[in-house]
Image (cartoon, rainbow, N blue to C red; front, side, top):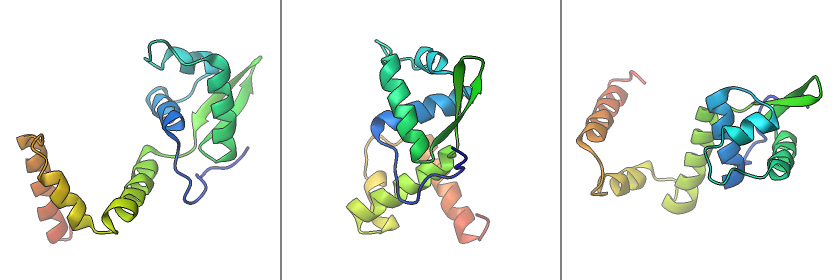
Length: 132
């Protein structure tokens, strides 16, 4: 139960990711609190969330402590860590590891906003200047 890092190469499933997103938002919570914070309609089933949390704990994604009769769960993997692992997986699987191919695809998307383009330009300039 004391794992503090996600097992190498283990990406969360879509269901696990939804629970991680809830826990990142609320910090920690009992199963009831997680279900209530889900913002899904209808909310996920209590027993399903309980099963997912146990699986996630074996994967090193969450941990828990007992508080009274309830278990309180919290994420042990950071949002940024999951984002990085997911992006690396995406790059390898769909773009042969090429960041430029991914960026070209993103930039060719007609739905990118001017604000997002400005952010990307700023990041690229910073990267060129060695500031990142």
